[in-house]
Structures are given as C-alpha cells and as structure tokens.
Image (cartoon, rainbow, N blue to C red; front, side, top):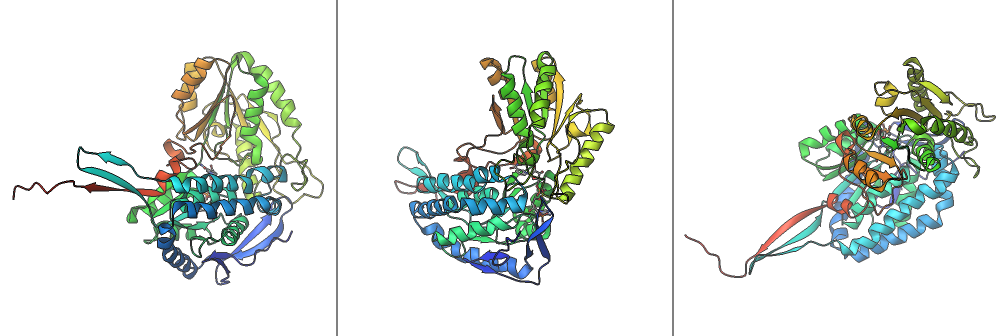
Length: 487
Ligand code: NDP
C-alpha cells in the first residue's frame, strides 16, 4: 500500500525532510499495512514554516483579490483533475470507502476553493456617512494563520481553512492529524502547481506538541482547530497569552427529532447518513435520535433491516458502503462505548461487534450499531463516541423532545423530521445548535455557515461568514473640514 510522499513537510513551495523529528506512520486502516513513514516537525521546521509564511504574506495581501482568487480557482481545477488519485490516497490514509472519498473529500476541497476564489474580489469594507465627515472600513488580512486538522476529512479540513484564509490575503500553515498526514501535502503541491507564491501555504507534520507550538507562536495571528473539545480547551489556553483570533470546530452529540408525521423512510435515511457515513466519524453526526412514540416501533423495524443491508468491505471497491474506522485504537474506544451501552441497559438492535471480513483480519473494522431503549443518562447518550453507533430514544411531545435535545454541553448540529411546516421552524428556532436541518441531515455545502454553539465551538467556517473570521476591520475616520478644537 505504498503512498509515500516525496517528503514530510511542504514549506515555501517545496518538499522538505528532517529525519530528526519523531516518526509518523500512515497506516491503511483496512488491513493494518504501512502506507508511508514521515517525520514530525522539529522546532526548526516549525520556525522555517513561520518565517516562510511571514515573508510571503505582505505581497500576497497586496495582490488584487481577483488575482488571488484566480490562483484558488486554478487549484480547484487541479484537484478535480487529480480527484481519482487524491481519493485513493485519502481512502488509504483514512480507510473511508472510495465511494465516499470520490465525492466528499478532494471534491469538497475544490468546492471551497471555487467559492472563496470567486469571493476574493468581493471582500470589501463599508462606507458610513456622518453628514460631511465619513468613516470607511477596510477588511484587512490578519497575517499568518494556522490550521490544525482532525483525521476524518483531511484534505477537506485543510481546504475549508486555507481557502477563506488565502482569499482574504493571509498566509497559512497547516498541521494535519498525525493519523492522516498525506493529502494536505498534495493540496500544497496543487497550490504550487497553480502558481501560488512560495510560502503562502505550508504544511508541517506533527503530533499534539506541533499543534501546541503553532497555537502559542507569537508570529501567528490566528489559529483554527478542528478537533475534540478537550483539545479545543488546550488550544484556546495556548492561544491566550498572545491574544490570537480563534476558530474552534469541535465535537458534538447532536439530536435528530423524528415526529409522528414525518416521512419515515426519509427520517431513517437521514438518521443512517447522520450516524454511519464515514463509519460514524463525523463531528455533526446526529447520534441521539429521538423518535415520537407513535412511529417508534415501525422506525426501529425499518432501521434494523436497512442497517443490516449496509455493505462493509474492501474500501477500494466502488460498491462498498463503509470502510473501517481510522485506527484500531479508535475502534477499540468505540467498542468500549458499546460495552457501556449494554452494561447500562440499552438494547442492541443490530451490530455491536467486529465483522468478519476475509483478507481484512487486521483492520479497524466495526459493525454499524443501533441501540434501542436508550435513556438520557446513559453514557452512550451523553458522550461523543465518534464511531458508527446510533442511540434511539423515545419521546411523547414536542416540549419534552426539545428539552431533552438541548440538555447537552454540546451544540454543534441538530435535525428535525416532520411534515408540519410550522412545527419544523418552531422546533429549529429553539434547538441550541449552530447548524440545523429540516427533513434532511448532514448536508454541509460551502455556501452555508458551519459551526457550533456551547462547547462545540467558536466561529463559523464556509460561506461569507468565514471572511469575518479571517480579516480584521480597520475604521478610517475622514474629516471634511478643519479640526474644531477648544485649545
Ligand atoms: P483531537 O482533538 O484529538 O486532535 C485534533 C488535532 O489537534 C490533531 O491534529 C491533533 O494532533 C492536534 N492536537 C492534539 N493535542 C493538541 C494540543 N495540545 N495543541 C494543539 N494541537 C493538538 O481530535 P481528533 O483528531 O481525534 O478528531 C476527532 C474530534 O474532532 C472529534 O471530537 C470530532 O467531533 C472533532 N471534529 C469536529 C469537527 C467540526 O467541524 N466541528 C469536524 C471533524 C471532527 P494529533 O493528531 O497528533 O493528536
């Protein structure tokens, strides 16, 4: 399963190696085979990336927005042309089925580059008339920004962060999760091939300490993290002494509310996508599925048979629905949650174990699992599992469902399935979540803001909202007459 990159880091437009760093191994989670061996950044490599990004940023910010945008659009085109190879490597690195990576990874990175490439020339300040005097505002780049990624959508996360940052005139340093180091380097290659000036986008590999070095670096103006809540707290603390801007895309335990009048097949389909896609490793997954009592039994029946029809198998086979999880360690963590569900009295409706797949005995496999008879206080209903484990809970009325749905420290996402238009909007307006859906789940187009409330995050990615998070506003007061001074 060779996917060895040319070197571990990509700084100032070229690959750089430094074998003094700790070893990072990219493992194919389907089989446990080695894809590639890389090295974490030493402090010298981190400094080199910061210096390159600092040196490149002023000239990049001074370019016209449409010129910057043109380079992002060219990069998007290259990602689309290279999608087959990029998807294969993303599958090797993450284990996600190629059926998914072909449409949801490099393709979604390209969407972000196209959207922000198009927007780059339209980032403007405003004019405020004061009846003679006036104020105008400038939207200026922040400087050097850094991104730290999770393992589930490696190239997508790198692009969701860098595309708006670059469109706004910032330079960028990205640190992928050490579990999925490969495709961010290929994004860097595509940027370089598209004509991005050297140093505007850089990739350094590393573990948590490399992320911490970026989060605390005095020459970095902003840090954007996609990761868990505990890591978010650490990164916020590391960013505090230098008062950095932050965007935090953190974890969730999102609710899906299915009312009696919902189109049941759509609600089941939405709940399955919102729990099993990417083998359950999606932050916005709707892992608490509240079903109204009148349809509860029918919902469980159909959910069981549809879940048992999911095809697990060779991730590189286009007919496979689900691959393994990202690593055996993560899979074992999820199996631990499944055991806690059983222990605390939930009923396994389907799944709950490790599938037997010939030729894949050493992989990080797990069955898509549904628990019924779940109550709010169970561990599986409170903690983020980050695997393909759905909890189904029953409810009687709307007020009760809302109260229980909101009883969580998380607030990333939520969904409602109902045929009653008024109820849909009323319920969504009261759900404590940053991203919500009516009669669908987990669609996150680049045109829409994405992010969480409560402990699920700070700031928004995608859409015009991201521009606010990668620029600072300067007010310019302009006098039209002489200074009126009493002195
Ligand atoms: P982690 O929080 O473990 O790690 C995220 C990134 O932070 C990794 O690159 C990690 O490096 C790095 N890191 C770890 N410790 C530190 C530190 N002290 N300072 C700086 N960086 C550090 O998350 P996972 O990779 O396990 O991803 C899963 C989590 O991400 C889930 O909670 C999920 O909900 C969340 N997530 C949120 C999304 C959102 O948009 N809201 C989207 C996707 C995932 P290393 O890999 O070396 O540990």
